[in-house]
Length: 470
Image (cartoon, rainbow, N blue to C red; front, side, top):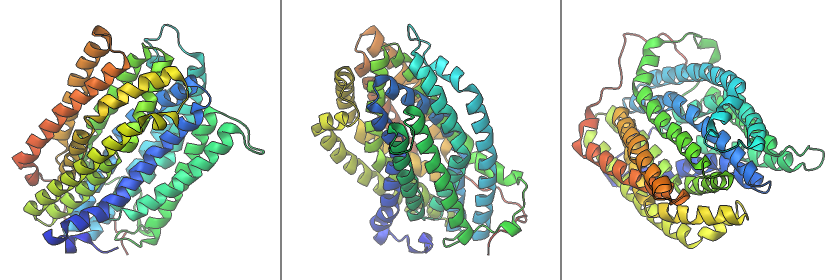
């Protein structure tokens, strides 16, 4: 894999963006498909099964999102070091991220296994009577998914490091294999094909877990072979945390973690509030969230490309070029998401029918989705500029804007629209649209200020103590 910083000239800007973005778009698409396939397959079991999987995923996402600090910090620092031509230091970042990520994954797996039922109880606090199916099946689903993160989180760290060096194709390959395993075992274990037992919601969790195990093993093989710019040599690694390196990672990562915590924990609050409308509303909201998670993929993919390209440009001290890459990535993303919104609006009914045939769920999900499609291109703008700021190490402002949008604008107007004005589920999605407008305006202001170009992301020391590069 060639080092992209040697060929980042303005004349090849669009080509470079697309070369990084298309594998990232597909990877995020496939990553989201893990949850989408779970919901589609268990949708045949009824609204309670959909709600059980969705509630479980809401809890998982809030915790995983918080731990993404390691991956976001790793991507930014690796990109900066690669841009500066310091591969040995980029390699050291990789090992420390992997070591810390594995430790965090074991802690996460243990806590999730022990407290899964209590977390689901909290999610249904506003329901008149807790749905016993959700509580029983959802807690089993949660336990299995949390334990599977022992493999899932290290896999994310590996993908993030490869993204930092500009290798988007290998993470895509890992995600393809992960999804193939997930889909096959979902089908076998949810419905009980052949000698496999019909496990329903539990089968969906096992399929997801097996996919993560396989993906993690493939990722480890990739970095051990070292076909990219980074290689792991077990005989040379030092099994000790380098706290200065961890500090560098967390300096970028903690604000990003808090941003993800704010975003995902707000989803917990909204799911609790939606729960007050009944099980059908939870299922309709789950369908709407799954559909939009697919349409967001251009934003996530081009945002990941912007993180890498901006980080490498700034590492090479090319600030103006970094700005141009961010702007061009934004133009491309907004254009693609306008087209996606139009297509989804036209075919919204067939899309929803992929998930469920329940009339009450369809009647609530359809208007909610239609409302948000008007705001979707602006969300693409936010995602790409957020990716650019992360590549620069300017994660604090992304955190501020997410807190303001999710916990201020969206929460306030959700209560106003859904409950005071009695708009039901559509009120939650209208509030989400207002949240997107505010965040898009704020992040545009921060980007245009240019202050993100001068963030210091690397605290150096005289020598790297671990040598894991060939």
